[in-house]
Image 1: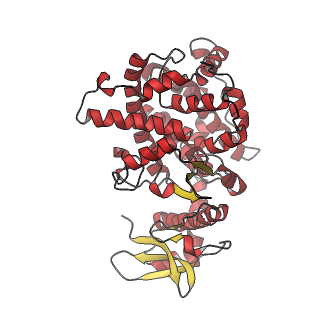
Image 2: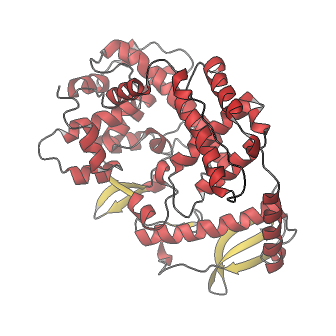
Length: 435
């Protein structure tokens, strides 16, 4: 259990990181360095961030996050007994020596994968969160397999690569086979890049693509075909007007959940936001920009960008009347201030912590699966022509398809509000659905 709590506050007119020994008044301060023209009128003490829709605020919040993460790692690894010890130079030197000594030991595949996840997540290159999420998925599958995860990374061979592929195909029915095999192979590539020139390198040559049904090209074509599938305008309207009593749904509060799941999909259509980003939206993400109510957020897949890339990742999308009515409908129903009162939103998640993020991600996946299960029953009623399987993401694809092919659409503004690129819109949505 952590015994030192960290928070930002003012001390002698200096903005500092305060370390407090829990249960006592013992504390110590470390002045914050690196902030650029901070607007103190926008500082939210409770939220511990600058709460304004500006690039400067985002950059300053990033400085604060990095500082807090550094000292939190010292607390977790070095176990300082007092706040003063936490901020001492000697503790930083000890931590550096411990880290250097740990790198001398050959890590297991699982241990190296954990290190890789941390490096990708906190990379100075600003790699998007999708990169390390894929490796978290690989780590979970290795944990379920149980043996390969404990093999020293330097001893990984084609034998282990093939064995992992067989496990995915035989035990998990080939679910996510190709992405998992790619991540496995890329993990060894990252390891090879860290070796000295005179050290033996890992070479994986097992032809894993031959182990799946059909060719890789056919797999990609099928994936591309499904990518553009969208509801027609009439089909979407049938979904909005659907009599939910026609949908059989077991369990308590079934009427409430059917309405909640439909509102979630409508909100996603209206605001063009990805399912995972809608789940975590909070009331504090609603801002007033030029007199217009907007939602300001950074997509989860881009939250670990740095510098200019982070600034460009910020999405500011105006709230439509329909979306606002949904926000009003569920206002105050989430104890943690989320827009949608899902069970997953009954606690605050530390999205910058790998373990916490992974727990959130798995629960988020289960939530989306529940909504997709509901949508599969909806599909049987509205019977969309171009959709093989109605899922939450179909609504994001549908709104892009409808808007891109509408007259007078400013595609640059559409890409900006949708948190995507003009290139992606041109590639996947022009004339994707003319009905």
